[in-house]
Image (cartoon, rainbow, N blue to C red):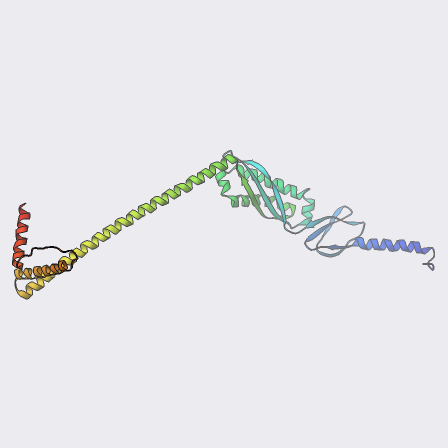
Length: 292
């Protein structure tokens, strides 16, 4: 420094100016950002992620724009539906800047413009729908808002990824009425289900009774057919219908006596002396019944 003499301060100033110049000239843009550079007050270029050099004091970074997907909350507002019901509704918007220079120069306040556009379109869309349709058509409302907003957003250099209605809040009296209606509908469905169950049970019971009677009749028919076949077989064997009848009657008489003998109750029974006497007794009984 002593050898330089009077030039030392001057060289020091030159060194400081050079350092400042280099610091101003070198720009490192982070990932997912875009920097807008103006030269002498006019748009010059857009710097994307990486290392860049600009002319100090001539070029100037005027805006740093995020290229990430951004979430914008739409404040709640009151809207009148087609059937004159005042509802409170809010939404959320997801968008991405695709042309940073348009987002900086084509609109004064990007987020404010998006909020106002969505709120305006919400009032128009909700105003043309009834409350029941609004509560069941969230996807339809979201799609219509996105479609309308995308037309304006293209000039702002952004892409509307999606718009979602967050909450639809009807008046308290409407909510109470809807709750009562839902409860009444549930009770109605429960009563209908119970009635259908009882009806089905009655049908099944009737079908079961019908089937039992049919099976009983079929069993009686089979027994009768079996008895007829037995009489026929005995008649063919002995060659006489009367004798066949006596044999079958006697067989039944003997089986009846066996059951009576095996019974736990002691009874006194007057028996006819022979099968012929039993047949005469039955004939006499049948005659009395027909005469009476």
